[in-house]
Image (cartoon, rainbow, N blue to C red; front, side, top):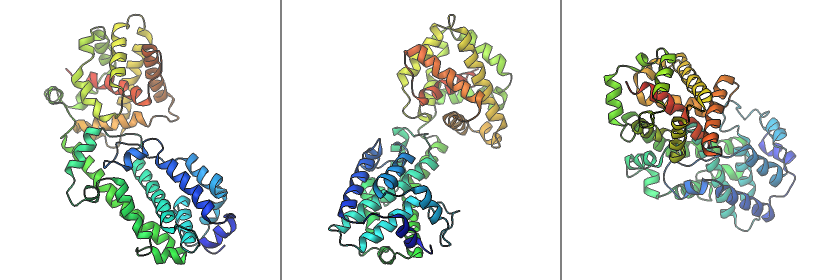
Length: 393
């Protein structure tokens, strides 16, 4: 097989007709309304909603609708000289398949070509946004407060500001693939260079719109305009550097245990509120109840609670002191908290000790609530315990 057309001639056996277009439209509409996607599309913030094009979504697209084995398709596409597999954007089989389908639609007798092209371009753009979301945020969402503050920071001529929501931005970008758009001739011809250039152009445009917003979020984090509690910061600064607090974790475990049964001292709401913006959508009331349970029932559950606190502090400090960015993490409280939260949020690894701490947090919440919390709740409890021992004298 010499080119993209040859590959799809071999793999795509069903006709590109109105029946297929209807199936694709139903799939795209379903996916656009799935989870938090629709909230993102009708809004104008970034990082607040989770956007995910999952493996199961991909399987439905290829296996159920197009009747293609995506593994074999990937093998043949990546075997073409025109496709640089090191370039994740142009070698992504979802992207290639969508622009190829648009090529077929342009050269077909389908009734409503513009609608079909718009739907597929919408999917292409949202898959790109899904990739950008997970690259920038993973499952570490930002709070509504930070997202809105970032929106306020954007200049008035920014695309999202001018157009009002992401749906309008997507419709605007989709015009590039229509008859008078800059991609139309490349899509019409269907040559490899034209199809791959179309993918690159759209990705570049979407990157620009999306990254402008994420840069505003990072700027807010760096300046601390939204996050941070002055009383904690002052107390911390008066008490020395982070590095000076990360000594003798066993002594800090004992110190925390000594005050744990005093609920008002153990649950420091300044620290609690300081942490909230870093763990979006955490159940605030559940976490307060869990910490209250740890305080009220420590004597009867001392073994599991002490084990949890001890392993929490040791694992967190091991990560901080072993980080290649240790100096930065020691110097900046915001970077410090952000890195600790990210470490625990992405902790479902083969690291058995790390998973053990996550499971201890999970089980303590279960004992307190009679049900499991979310992974965000588990991480919040872990990081709160850690911060409680370093942010107060």
